[in-house]
Length: 183
Image (cartoon, rainbow, N blue to C red):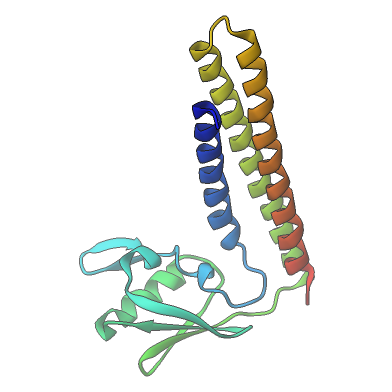
């Protein structure tokens, strides 16, 4: 594979990784650790995402309940305050050595709002893909100045990678919409 195509593939994978993390934050009415792992928590004199700080384990007890088990029980209040401050519509409750979060069922109106937000995130992902395509074609034209056959071949290769990435994004959107519409 040509270095330009490899670099394009790498950049497109980064776009997909960012988009996947972004889509995981959209609540589907089911308990999933991704709902809270990116929440900023202030503890030990600093602040960072719950996942990054590695303060606790996060598990889904069932479809409606998340369980957060802190490694250090002295940060229990910090975790609770951080989750409440995130305005994610979640109400953490301290239950002895764990924090329990009940995930409320979604109303039809809320589902439609979340689908709208999801489509917006998908569109932002597609914009990032188009930016990568534009950037890589511009770089390639500079590197392959005057070699029209190479430029044409690489443009097709880049477009194929972009099309595959766009198809992946579309499939993720369909899957997420189905999850949101399930009751």
